[in-house]
Image (cartoon, rainbow, N blue to C red; front, top):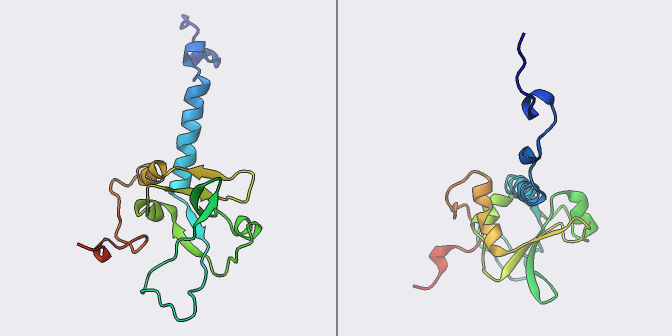
Length: 155
């Protein structure tokens, strides 16, 4: 009987060259996190329209918070996280995060995911706009009514 040379596939032990570096692992973990976010449903806090104010059908209000001179649109991954921030789950919109990302409103606004928690995450606009790629969608601007309506812009 012959035996194959011992390597990571036969011994069950990884060889050093087969083990990902911490940078590679961090990149893989980051990509997995972005994939998870991109395919999740976010809770977007909403404030009722002011008296006398009418919003167009299907329009949503994007709440903006500011911290350390940076503006964020907050979203939450659970009702508990939303409540911990002091918002009302009954008025929040449930929206696919990828749809919000595909229609991101501005280059100077970041996304704050669960901003009231220790696990909160801030994403810059370029990363937010890349979320459809992580969700497996090729195009941006899904035309679903989220974000500014390009047709309403002055010519």
